[in-house]
Image 1 (tube, rainbow, N blue to C red):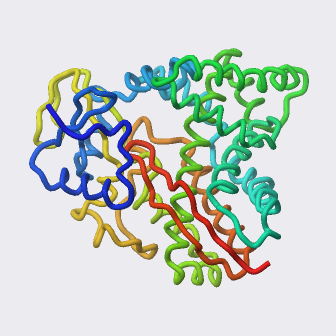
Image 2: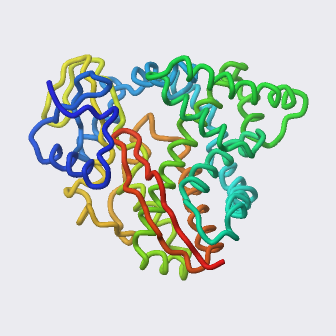
Image 3: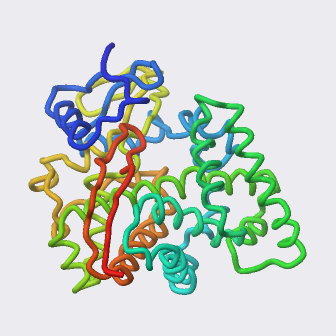
Length: 380
């Protein structure tokens, strides 16, 4: 089995989507490689939905046990079956719609304004470096009840967690750095619980190590993917001046811009799964032990489901996108993530008059996908 090595592939701009379109049009499943291991790409929308809900044949846990658990610790994301459901329910207060709505109303928009305050008078900025790479980390910290402000350290630590496979020692140091921040706050919450996620996790029946594991997970998975999605959103909108003008005049279109950006450039383009037994994916039977790559970015552009799938159209009203996964491992933080994206775009349009694009890099990455920079200017 041969194919492109996706671990380090940049595949900027349309290159990724052309590769996935070719795989989608080919019969069966397309060979690829991940970390040097042979794998098969699943790219068609219907195949993706069917195989991702099949927890018996294609559970999500084994891959996360290899890629995330060694540094984050055991969390619901690396568990399957009844254990996954039970632990996920313990963590769910962090994501339920009412706490999220209260956080958005009371803290998220003011927090976005606080970040923009740091560069609003300058007249120019890189929105990726100064907003996308800051707000999601601040938001997770504020929602947890942790200190906010050292976003560069938070970002570096989080990226180090995700680099566990390449640098396990560095990832362990990053996990320790997070624990050093969280433990003193946990001690305070034991004496005086507050209305924050850390207090909720501590009162949900988790022990200290479980709480620390889920906090690390929130940074490694939640903050990073939201930051990447935000960078893609800014590029998708700001490279289309007509959409900037439309959203500035009618903020009600912002949620649709967020949805279409998540469809066309999801922050997780490809999600690994392992076949634990012989089973069918579409019309292809794969043996147990096969590594499968769920190409969410490919399913989101399947012409069998989406009209003119490569067009950025915030007015489309079609099937649900796959960007937050499907089935038992559907991302519980979807509402918070979408709300952060909408808040960031709303505040940028509100605070930066005459906003125009100077230069934007192309999205890149075959597994995690982000836009490296979006430079803009506006009237001071």
